[in-house]
Image 1 (cartoon, rainbow, N blue to C red):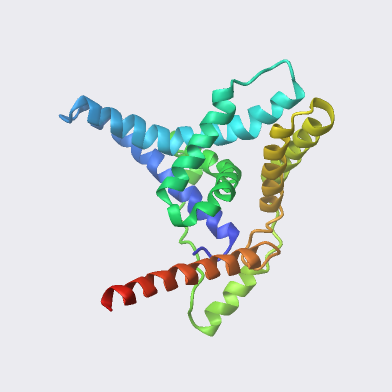
Image 2: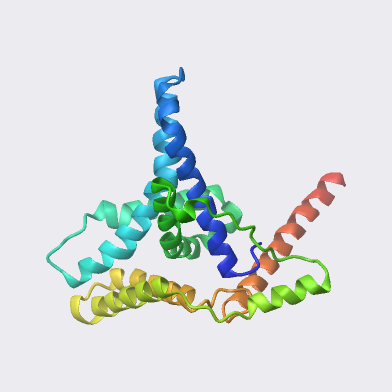
Length: 242
């Protein structure tokens, strides 16, 4: 695992920028190849565009920008399929592909929305080959090593770094959530906006880092769930051997 939230941001930037660079350089070759037409569409549209570009654009520009803005302009109505059906379908498909971690689904959707700032900026860097597109920094990892390594990790954990973009998005989203409760009376909007706003604030204040307020219980919770799943697998193996 990345040793800190700062290292995780670098890692996700690299993972989001790399596929877009690959798509930019190989899309013409894919269309010119002898592959079947449907295979070309799958590679260019489904694999690269939808999964690596469009999902980050929808998360940030729609759910984290357009939805809060619609609260301040009640005359603008968002279709039900875009507001409810689309996020519910994303949540359900996520739960289907990770049945043992279904209880993480809502947290993961909020988490991915908050990370969309980093990922969309990485997509822009990769698409236009900006300066940070070729940045390559090895991600420092958390694990069992020597005492010097553990000391370095503790120093990384104790960072007090704050992130302005996440803080501004958190304030904007929380303001929209409060406005939705007291002025527009849209409770369903306010629940999502308040939860998303708190997640943005937690990211902006670096509270999700391994040694900070939310990092410790999250690490403990993940460790407990990991031991539980490991125990279930071991028990199942013993029963099968028996």
